[in-house]
Image (tube, rainbow, N blue to C red; front, side):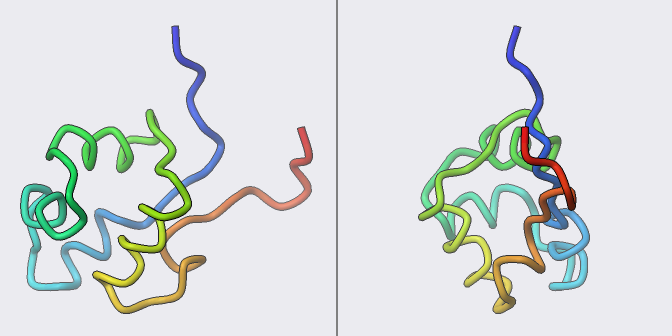
Length: 75
């Protein structure tokens, strides 16, 4: 079983703030499947650094507005 990532994200909120962009639209913009976007949103998959930057660019926000890592968690 895959261990969930501790990285959280604001993708769903950002999609809705951008005129209710669908998961499929985001997937098309970053070159992945809708299932990949779903897994990232649900925290079941951590995107590559390159994909993370692509997602941030789609929403025109800094990377840390999209992805967050808990403070003080070094493990």
